Length: 428
Image (cartoon, rainbow, N blue to C red; front, side):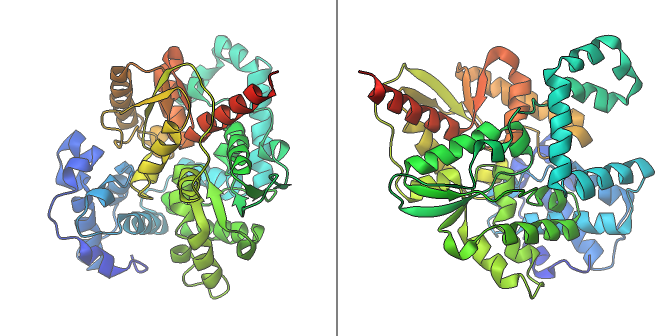
């Protein structure tokens, strides 16, 4: 772990305040499965007292990376940095190598999520597979029994790919009637394919609040998937590409609406800190990235007018929004501004739902337990509408609830209120 900042490891006081917040520790009650235990293992490796082993690799990939420990930590340990460097060292040492694993990592991290054209091509194929009815025929044919069980079990929960991606719904530059700010819009990768309408809603809300919106074409993945899975080299490539796409100096803010991406996007200066060509650009970038709810509250967004039928909503706090970015109050302010909407607080709202990037693929049993716990808490609220601000959480919760409830992004609910307001004004 040569690149690890040893001073960060030393910050840990071993007080144990992180233990009650850690989902894996609460599941096993084993010290090694806690943030404190993992940091102790990292320190032992950095001190040369332990080797990077397969067991260490499995432990670090058992961690969700939910960052609840960072909120609980009184010493302010930068666990995300430790987590990413530990996984990077695991990949460098190859202790988890198998030909199958290497192939899937190459296909996803170095191809699919590194090349926007390829991701869009696969998205088009998935859309055809789903919209044509071919998916139903495949399920009925029994051919899925030929693929590994972990992939077969995931097939029914495959997200619905949208017919139109973000660049088909959003012009490169969109201007409000009166411009007060100029912002850049991040469309993401998973968000672009599966929740492109959320990106459109985000732009509409920004326009309604006097923001000119610049949305570069062919943005691609921000690199969070790469960084969280130990490929810091490709994460840096993705970061450089995004920086070049945006006109940083001409923008008041760069807007993201995906919590997992936002947590990563705000730390490009750390990722590119040793790159002389991008170091200063990355610092500027970090200073301008804002979550959509964070930005709206900071500019004093306009509350929609009019009346609407009373409806209750509960809010699940995406880990990388509340723990990774410290944003908790702002989404609630957005929700409370929507006419007719009553916010019912969710028990354990900040607890992880089990999505955690690709965790429900790599650790399906633990992910399922966390999903069930989250669904039970939602059901106790008695609401049929759930708000959350991350695509992974959205899918995990919607799959758990089925048709029992609807999951929406807070910005979508605000956009719907603006549209209802406009429709009311248009009536004679």
